Length: 478
Image 1 (cartoon, rainbow, N blue to C red):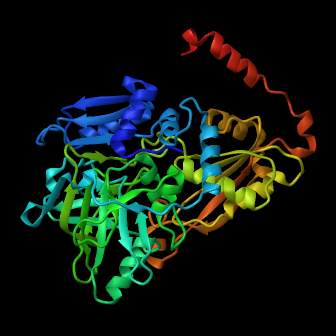
Image 2: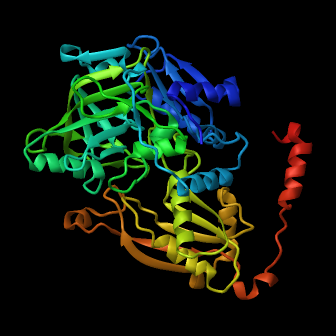
């Protein structure tokens, strides 16, 4: 896997390995919807990464970086893989490295570039940063979209790192929406039950390995810093700002430090926000961070990953590393044989598994195993199993299998399972009753095993022929 000192090192690598056009400088776009709109339009076309500068009302050099892993090539660079790696090779490499991962604890250093500017007391001002309002229905300006939220368990000392949406509420106030089943909320609750505020740090702007690790559902007691160190192959450098009990990345762009009081003591109206489901979700009284200190580098960069309609390639991760690799690993652990790949569409709303059938029950075994994986807040709604000749990274190919190999009467099963609170299909009555359940669909889109050898042959060119044609006619086909 890759080793980047910081976000800037990653940006430099993108241009060095993929060309100067890979990161496009955008001058003069406004923070109110323009940055969000341009990001969405670029992501829809799997366009370049975008570095917004000279944002009206802010000093030159106060920047916003988006669409940072919006293509397979950028994902490959982020993970230290050859830039021409196929999408499935990227998922396979992530799965294998995660499976063999050796935790590497962070290493403490005495100083770092995040200390170039330390704002305390009257200097604290979250409004000095060009935080975008990403969508026109958002309830505020969300500085936390690809952020790291750091807390420490008061009993064990375990340092947890997670990702939660964070909205600027004023010069010295930040709100966070943390679902009740997440680790940071559980840690904060321990403090609140003792009548204490929870110390917290929110990191805005770090390298892609750190931001990806922060979004992973690590087991309780395991720090995401240790996972990131294992993925990097080298410990993450952290430091403790004077008077702080929380380790922060030494080379982060911006770090917001403070305390989170109990909701009974202070809360704020948070939301709505355009979430990854493609809908605005949740508005209510939520937790507040009382900001005591802001640390930032000279010319700081906000790392932005605004959620979009999930059928749009995700600007923060065009290759579904976590959802696909975790499901793949779970399938192997469940004894599913001859897996050729796993892919996730619409973030993880549809999971597609490719297998090579060797027995009549293989497809159903894979479907039941995939649907049976324990999830934390996910809402995988459709599970599809296809034959190995289907390119599952190509939606048109998956649709071809669905349209031509599925008999709706025989090939589809419907089950019930828990969902998440942001599920747009939950009715108000079900939410009020605490019924967070949904239906899931299992679809066997494989050729029927009993007569698969007699199934009509495809008229598609073989992959070897396609590769040769692409190479010979690349000037025409590029």
